[in-house]
Image (cartoon, rainbow, N blue to C red; front, side, top):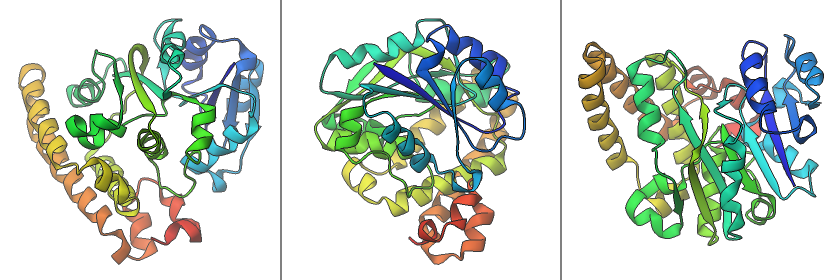
Length: 307
């Protein structure tokens, strides 16, 4: 038995393609929409599709905490599948492929391949091809020797968890700015479980981030790594992976869109600056962190605002 869980906020714009792709893979009563007080037609569209709908105050939304709430709602589910509202499944077999690795009882989680959205520019498309290869693999704790921190990479835009293992490792963390998926995958690997990357489970999902948005996102990554220092201690630092990405991006752009090379260099600098500042967040005031972060509401919670 599995349940599909989708956090939403004003998802009406993406709804037609998202719902059509999801309904091709599951029956409606397998889906829970957990909505953060949308002001558009999201709730009515979800109800019309036959999905179960649960509301949560927007002010209380937390990437880990909101998802953990749904884990506790389905104690009888064997597998919990998480999607985001802008992830459009490719083909009716995407979720079936995602669930295939769970025939191995030592697999605690699996995630699928994200493809660039239609119309994506080269910088956006390269990021997806770099982070999501065409080849599936099963990762164990030993994979950290080869992959470093990437061994624990996982994205809740298209992911599935064995609920019993998820509960065993403490569930999703409720006090992280984001990256609850990576933290959970790392805990599973450290506990001796496997994480599967399933390239055959595909969804269209990417973002045309501006340099300013890239800065904010990487500031938040720095905050995550600062507060969850055990991640880098156990899996290794990110420097080598960043260098590999820059070289790969330059080669890709020279082949496909050479006029975007200056923009790529600017983005690299803004990402590096954002990440470095995020690592130093403990020295900043809450107001400064709110201004620099992609998730400013996180800092309104007094418990989250403390390092």
